[in-house]
Length: 173
Image 1 (cartoon, rainbow, N blue to C red):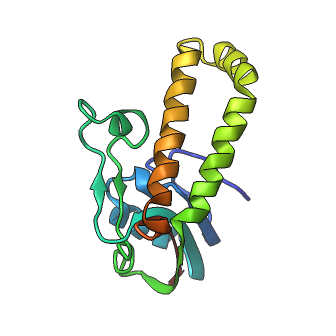
Image 2 (cartoon, one colour):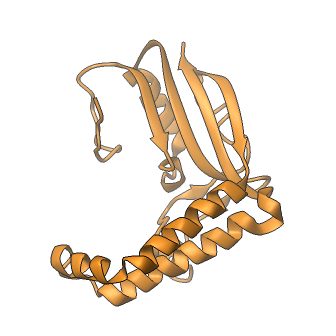
């Protein structure tokens, strides 16, 4: 069963064997609180897998919505963690494994997304105008295009060793 919902309001009716989160934790300001809640949602021995963007050493907070375009448009109130940030956030979850994936891999993904955006610009523009009536489609597409370019270069920097993907596997106690 796949559940797509506002995580801050989610109250499960059952417990789960597995919970998977792909690139969502960067948008959360208090991941420890969420991880403690998730631990309550898991069956004994249940697992939580998360994939997050990470910097090798330093966190980056997206607080300044007045001056940071990235904070205002994409990661409002979020935090890009550092390598190992999630290791000990939740007393009710045991860390079972960690994987680091080179930023070069994600750079290639972003390049394909940029290529797809460019190849499908007319269709995307029409879709935005139809479904998001408040959208200024050309501006929104250009913002997203700039986001993809910036992120692609960021993950390519230093041969993908500074910014990369981290994957964590936790098990409930």
